[in-house]
Length: 265
Image 1: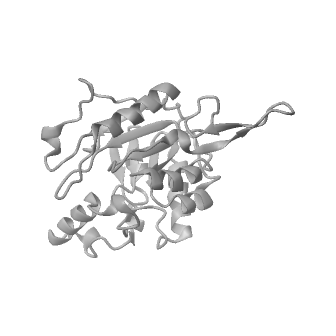
Image 2 (image 1 turned 90 degrees about the vertical axis):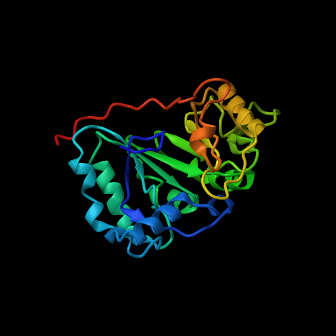
């Protein structure tokens, strides 16, 4: 079982990463990898260096009970140092295990769109991490190119306000003489939009503060568009003390998980 609130377990065929944006500054996975390296764990002998673990590829076949799986919680599947052939192998494993639902989250949206754009079976969700407006503007358009059943956005750590409605999905053609209507990424009139939003503050040493109004504004956007909203945590140095209650309650909305046919395993 995973301690990450929005999933059930993790699968790490790839570990390690390199920093590419502001949200990477206090990476929890890097801290954990260095701790595991110090403990002498064989899988982390190279610390947080990008590493492909072929010996982990068969793990989902051994999980008898259907579960929600966060893929590469300790790295980024679409890192430029991960070979295309290995990414293809990971997708084949996910395709071969339809009883599980795989949540693939990346900061490298262009490579995800290019390499996994047509490979999204119903049990594979596509997600991008966006920590501020700049990251959202850069990564969400590529997310929308993926033909996944669920496209999700993780605003964690949230480092500034984000207006998801300013990101264009496309335009709707109108009768002659009328201006085209711009459709945004949350628009509930289109199927291929953002289907889920996760939000959380940064935690651990040096955690940067998250403003309550940033959180409420994104929640209002989701409510208006009828997009499931999951509030993970306020964060801070002591995230347990800060908790995860917003407006007096927890918010744990999830996308509807489509039932997959039995794969015979």
